[in-house]
Image (cartoon, rainbow, N blue to C red; front, side, top):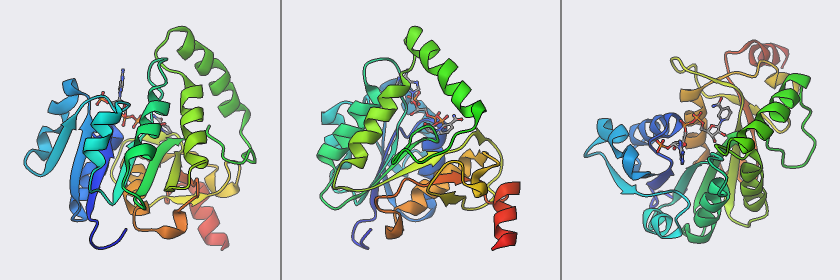
Length: 233
Ligand SMILES: NC(=O)c1ccc[n+]([C@@H]2O[C@H](COP(=O)([O-])OP(=O)(O)OC[C@H]3O[C@@H](n4cnc5c(N)ncnc54)[C@H](OP(=O)(O)O)[C@@H]3O)[C@@H](O)[C@H]2O)c1
């Protein structure tokens, strides 16, 4: 991001990942605009007076257009809630309305693949096989929605990064996660990241042009697989 573009928008600011991102962004001196559902505005009370909130659903193009105006970076929590293409609508609204040249950083999970070269454990495959159809059956989530959202991001010319999170846990920060291009790479084997550090990676990505057009799969820097990789290299 250029120095003159220290205003960032966080789409999905009231969730767990979103609130960590707000905190990291404020700590780094960014001016923060957050988008969240009306009923969730109170979840951002801890930041009252320090950020601007645009209430609304994140797949509403008008809400997004207003929120991203003047922002040099947009951090987007992509969650496939419901069965109305919520993730896809959110990603498309950001792609359509973000400032030209803005840094766009999207969150998703390891199950998203950019080039089909990820290698998944039987456990991850089983989780997707069981959770996906169940979620769709009960209409609370549609994993294919996040897949389509990311497909559109990957196809765009915008300056995007798609950060693919491992399994998450709460806890104090351990530092910036490490990453690799493909799930299945040995460094990622531990499959665990602190949520606060997932958020840190998202916010740091704003300033790392080497991550433009990358879909890093991340893992905690203090996990056994990350430490083993550091010792080897
Ligand atoms: N959970 C994991 O283990 C895991 C693992 C890997 C990657 N990820 C990725 O991490 C990101 C966030 O995950 P998270 O677990 O930390 O969740 P989170 O931060 O709590 O985010 C949940 C988001 O979904 C919104 N939301 C919840 N219910 C909704 C509904 N019915 N309709 C519309 N929006 C709704 C929340 O908004 P409100 O505040 O308005 O409810 C919030 O913005 C996602 O991109 C996910 O793919 C998660």
